[in-house]
Length: 227
Image (cartoon, rainbow, N blue to C red; front, side):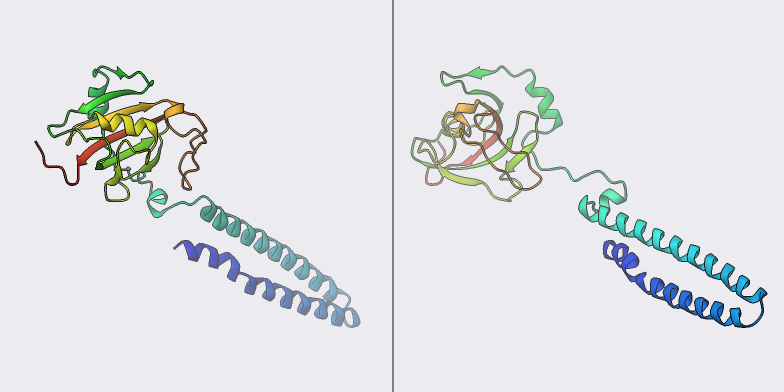
């Protein structure tokens, strides 16, 4: 349907050519009329003026249709938006009910300035430094807008914890978690992205040394048996 909205204004150039052809025909008739009856050229002139007005109206209408078609593409509107449907919800580790419960969870602050709240305390082991871990995460700016998420990629992120493979705040926050646990990390700027982060199109940009929020779930530790 989106392509049809563009094709209609563009294909209307056929109408424009018809107007031009008919306009030339009227001019010829006017010339012939001048050599015959005095009343005939006046009638043909009136018809020419009326047809010029009709063609001008068609041109304006076609331009308006074309503008609306281009505006629909530039705005990136979808069929769901056109139908008035709500935008698709991005997957989260903490839903609305979780957010309310989190308000009553005490905040823990570490010596580095990292803060966190446990959404759920896990029942498995904590990862030793240097071990690989598999974790899901939802990364947000302080306003709650998501700039990255393993949930949207469909698989947990595997990295070696405590080895500097991820930002300092995430490294520190996961080291004290247990397998099966979920935690919200409030990471200050110095422990986040000192040089900033350019996100994907449509996602918020992370400014240099700005705080970020990570919801993290520790899924499993490859090679380490649950105790």
